[in-house]
Each structure stands twice: as C-alpha cells, then as structure tokens.
Amino acid sequence: MKSEPGLPVLTGIGIVSPIGIGRSEFWAGLTEGRTGVRNISLFDASSFPSKIAAEVIGFDASPYLSRRELKSYPRQTQFALVGLMLALGDAKLAALDPYRTDVVLGAAQISFYAIEEEIRKGSHALREHEPELDPFGVLKTTLSIPASAIAFRSGVKGYVSTLTSACTSGIDAIGAAADRIRQGQADAVITGGVDTPITRIILNAFCAARMLSTRNDEPQSALAPFDRSHTKSVLGEGAAILILEDKRRAIARGASIYCELGRFAQEPENTNELFSLDRSGTGWKRMLRNVLAEDGADSVEAINAHGPSDDLVDRVEADVLRDVFGARLHKIPAVSIKGGIGSSMAAAGAMQVASAALMLKTGIIPPTRNYSNPDPDCALNISAQVRRMKRPLGSVLVNAHGIGGMNSAILLKRVKV
Image (cartoon, rainbow, N blue to C red; front, top):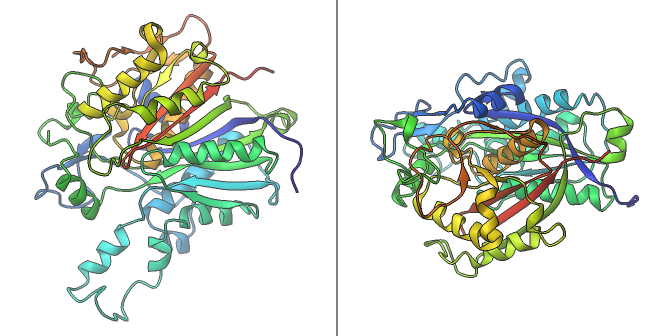
C-alpha cells in the first residue's frame, strides 16, 4: 500500500573506487587530482593493445564479509556489499524497516571472473558436463546477485531490482530509487551502481571495438577529458552505494543530509548507436531539457559531466551542453571525474552522483585530471585546479551517456530545511 508522497534525500555514501575506498578517501582522491589508472595487475594483459585500467588496489572484504560470502560471492558482489556497509555507517542508520525499504541497483556487466576461471580448468570446460565446476557459479555470474546480496545482508524485504543500461545504469537506478520514495512506495532505498569489467573477455571486446586508450607507457596521463590530448577511455571498476530516505523521516531521526534528489530523465538516441555515435546528440539534448523542465536551465550552478576522455564523445557532449545552456555555459563550472576512475560502467554514473552530492555539501569542485590544453571544440568551464565556490552551490547536474545510445541525467539540489 502506498503512503503519502515523499521527498528523496541522500543520507549515506559508500564507495569502493580506484582512487580510494570509503567516502573520505574517495573525495580526497578527487580533490587531490589522483588517478587510479595503471598497468593491469588482475591478470597478464601483455598481449592486449590496451594494457592499462583503473583498478581498485588493496581491496580486502574480509572485515565485512563472512568466510562463506568471501568464497561464494565474486569481486562485483563483494564491492557492492562493502559499499553497503560503508553507506549504512555513513548514514548512521542502525535499523531499516524491512517492508518499507527497497534495493534498486545498477549493473551493466555480469561477473566474468567465474567464467574465465572455469575456462582455465580445461579446454572442455563449459562445452560438456564437468562435475568439477564451481557450485557457486550461478551466484557468481547472475547479474541480479549484488542487489539480492544487499537485500539479504540488510534484511530488506521490499522491492529488489537490478537495472542495466550500460554506462547510465547507476544513474538510472538512482533515479528509479528516488521515484520509489517520491511516489510513496518506500521510505528508504539502497541504490547505486557496481561493475567489475576489467576481465580478459571484456578487455578483448573493447580492444576489438577500438574503444580503449593504448597509451600504455603513460597510464597516469592516458585520460584527459575535454583536453586536446583525449583519445579513448580505459576500463575502470568499483561500486558506489547510496542510501536515499524520505526527507521527513531523515530529519526526524537527525540524519545528516547531503542533498535532495531532483528530476531524473533517460532517453535513447534516435539512431542505432551500437556501432556509431549520433553526432547530433538529438536524444541527449531532449533528455536534458526533460530533466530541466521544472527548474529551468538557469537553475543549474555546476555540471558533473560524463566526459570519458573519448575525443568524439567529449565533443558531442560539449555540443549538447552548449545547445541546452547557450551563452551561459561558460559561466557554469564543470568537471569530469573519469580521469581518476576510468569508465567503470554502472559504477561510474553512481560515483558521479556521489561526487556531485559532495560538491553540494562542501562547495568544492574537484579538478579535472590532466586538463592542461583545452580542446577548442569542448568549450566548457573546466579547471585543472580545485575550486572553492564563494557561495554554496544550489544545484548540480549529473550527465551520462552509455553504449547503445542511452542518455541519462539527474539534478541534485541543496536541501532546504
């Protein structure tokens, strides 16, 4: 049964990222301009054209997970569960109403680690019956398991769902979660995004599609969003788990609130972008105007851009933003965090939302990594230095684009108490 409509606010952030684990380390990594891009260490990538990625180094789930969970859950689910525990701790949320709490998670890829492990067992593996296959294989390769594991660990008995829409999956999940609260269907939602695409199978596919940087001798500078030196992106991995609550209940329990979740929209391009990007950005522009339909373009005070450091995608995004904001665009400070975290699919969009919320909370705009020679076709108000705003930000637009032509954005607003 629905209750009266609510107003969704963000009260907890749990991050597992290539530049830091936990909200504080993640934010320090962003504001200090760190990058997690380095030579791939998860496997021998010496034969691949692209040998670099943004890995989560030093990840240890043992303080948070049981021995059985460590054995049965893959890296992807472990990231999600550690993110959950960090988010609950950040929100200081000791107890949840199990029937009024939902889980809506974004994930773009299944965990290929288990599949690759079985393939390594022998040439016949996966082609005929093999009694020695991992009995936890179903858990390790099912896309919905991270969300299910979160629900099981937190005791949630409400709505549990996984959304998958490439790189917009994380933002799409957060937008759907906010709507659950706005429509009175839940009092709290555990949401965000998680992905671990740094595997041989995925790396092979992206290399074949020529979508990855081959600056293997300079991984620290391989990603440069909106800079003349941008070429292609690199794979990343991680998780950003967020706690959304009804504003009235959050205030009643004395929660510290990061921001209010404003309007969300998603729209695909008009053309089939499985093989090429729609350079006109028609669907992208229409989606952004939908997001800004209530508050207006003039309400946006900062932009957390998609900015993957792909020369074509960066330029199309800049054109889209120029069309939507017009002459005012050069006055709106913008940032891309991809230079630090890489393209971690569902996790990247969720990390963008987390970083935008921290921008609102602190009045600080992180630097865009490796931004030193602006691309004249990407005329955005970007800085290579950290910026401290003279007055609090009122809103931040988070923008994302995904393979297959998906476009999503969400507006975050300063909370008015």
